[in-house]
Every structure is written in structure tokens, then in C-alpha cells.
Length: 516
Image 1 (cartoon, rainbow, N blue to C red):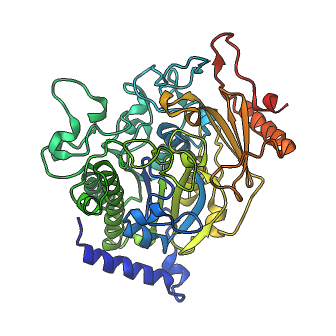
Image 2 (tube, one colour):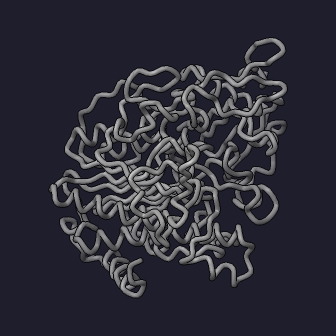
Image 3 (spheres, rainbow, N blue to C red):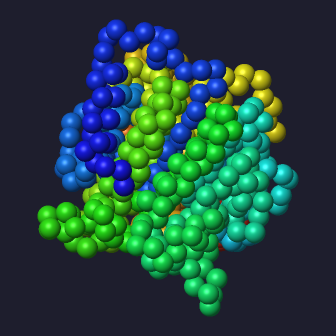
């Protein structure tokens, strides 16, 4: 860890710097090819930091200690309506391809080659989704696409994958980040979580049996140490940036933390304060995972400052899906993402709305807030625009839209835009209907969810009901029908998959068929 007092001084200086009115445009503007850090956290809930993304602080914000993210929020633009998919691999593939999950058919998490992970359901059959994930070459049961880092690499960027990859199934091309355009891979594989965060236990490696989750490449040198995976990955990220600096190349660092995904191992640097506060062991460990992520973020900010890179580096902070909202988390199930309903795996807001902040020197306004709804696939065209790359070709259509206009002017609004989610899968049987066989649409303040197993449409006004407690489908049947038709039209445009009834082999009705 860096000296905390020194870090506070540096961050305080940065906060002061960006608050000064006399800083010139030339001092703030990045070069044509700025460095980019995409800091993606795994399973971090919308309010699982000290930074509020609602209109007020909630108990969750007060529970966690993330001083670096708080400092960053004063320098960055905060997006209060940012979305991803409800499960990790679909979000990561959307980021790397610019495609909607309904379109690329990577609709849930991947694991082993050619094998679906969905539990069996008594009524519905899961469609043949792309169980092998992303592939840079034509490959069975995969989405063939031109990966984002490949374009960046082809345009002179030193591309670094650090932490969780989980783009493709084990023993497929997409499982290896080096096949996707990354020059360096630190710790990324087909694994969706570590077997252990503890270096002293070799991150869960066993010489006697293969454990996919223990496959954390290029991290063996930390085995047996008294360190934590989040900490070690941060060290390696800084070494990789050193290489880029020596090569005089702009870098793209995809800093994809394994935290705060299960298992909730206790990070000894932080856990004690939460235990002494009275948190249970698992919850104290979760809080420590969050603070470890914040420490990692602070380390990278300090590195950029120390090496005079802070004014030429774009920094994006985001989570890949909603927060996990079941045991061993403390409290009643689905209460952890308040004020949002449900959590990871669900298409209710708790499963898809993410904390997101962006700092683009000379473009974003320090401490600004944008309420435009955006989604993770938007970063494909956005990052390329940020990098100054105007001409590129892809084998896949790009569904994402550049959010650069909202970075230049956070007050812009487009209430006509449509966001669509498709999850024709079965995540976990025991979690109930909130987590299985759903599709959804948002336009303006209106959101429609279709629970396919039950043939039920639910309509919510998110401006008035962020908690999604009041289903308005019966009160506003015309709006329900309109949203169902929009959802159906977009799903058909994407050639989206739907589950089928086991008894008949027929697909479940489209949303507009249920509305009528």
C-alpha cells in the first residue's frame, strides 16, 4: 500500500486543481491518443461505495469506506442511470463487442467448452445460447466479433488485461485475452471468480486436481505470500504501465477486479475495522473487499499522478452487474441493493443498474452529474472516439451508441432512446422468479419487464418508483402495449432467443402477444 497520508495529500491537491477556474484548456486537454483505464468491479452494487448514486445517502453508502472513490467523484462526471447486463460474461462481451446480449446471444455466464450452465427447469427449455462466449475467429457456439482491444492495439495502444477476463469458455479462443488484442494478460482466464483471494493459499491452486477458478495466469510469483489478490493485481498493473511508458506508447488498461465476487475471503488490511464495528464475518469480509477495490483505485490514481500521466489519462469506473443479494450477504435476501429491487441475475434495477463515473481531462466537468440512461455496450464506440480512432472495421454490427455528447454536456437528455435486456436463461432455481426467464425494456422513465415463465408483463415508472414496487400495467394498458410492442420489435431485430415450453417445443409468446 502507498502511504495513506501521502495519498490524501495527492488526492486533496487533485481535488483543488480541478476546482480552480483559471486552469486553461491546454492544461486540461489530453493528447490525440490519451491513456485509458477502464476500472471494472465485479458484482459491485449501485450503492456499495461511499459515493451516493441516488438523490441522497443511504445506509449502504455509510457502511462502506471508499475515500478514493469519493475524491474521484469530485473530479469526474457521475452517471446515475448507467446499466449493464445482470450477469458478468454478457456484460464483458458487450463491452468487448459493442453488441447487445440479445443480439450476440451470450446471455449468461460461461464456464466449460460447449456446456451450458443453466439449471434445469420443470416448465421451460433454455435456448441454445452462445455457451462459448466471445471469439475473435469463427468458432462454434460463440459470437464472432472484432474485439475492442484489437482495434486499440492496431492503432498503437499497449493493451493490458489485468484481473478477471471471463470472455469465453475454457479451451476456446476467447478464454485467452491475448487472442482478443491484449498485449499483456495478468490473471485473466475462463474463470469467473478466484478459488481464493489469499496468496498464502496459492489463490486456491491444488496440485492434485484441476480447479478452473484457481487458473489465474502469471500470478504464481505471489504464491505463499501474505498478500491479497486485489493488492497483487494492482502491483502488476503498475508494472505493465511502466512497460508502456518505456515503449512510449499510450496504454489501455482494462483493470478488471475479481473483487467483490465470492468467495468472501477476509482482506487482513481492512477487515478488522468492520469486525470491531459488529459486522458478521462474511459481511465484514465483503466490506473489506470493497475497501480493497477502493485502495486499488487509489494506488492507480497515485501512480498516474507520480508519473505525470493524470492529465493525459481517461479513467472509467463501473461495475459489471448488480450486487449479489443473497446469503452469505447480511440481511434479508434482496435487501442489499436498496433502494433498488433484487440484485445480480435479475432484470429489476438491482440487477442491472451500475455505479459509473468518468473523468476525461478537458472534456468532463469535475463533480458533474448526468441522468441520461446509458449501457455498457456504449463503451465500444465511446472508447474508440476517446482514443481518436475514427476509421475502423468490425465483423459485427455495433449496437452501442457513443456517450461522448453526454460527456461534453451532462445536461443532455434523450428520452426516446430504447434499452433492451434479454435473459432467456435460468440462473439459480432457488432464487425465484426475479432471476429467471426475463426480458425488459426502458424508454424514458418507463420500464417494462416480461416474466416469460408466468406470461406476465409488469410496467414501472422509474422516476416515481425507483424501487419498482408499483406495477402499473393494469392502470396503463395502452402504455403497457406500446412498450411490449417496442420490446418485441427490438428483440426480433436482434433475432433474440426465447425459451421454449418443454411440453410442446413452442417458444414462449412474444411480449406484444401477451399484451394483446
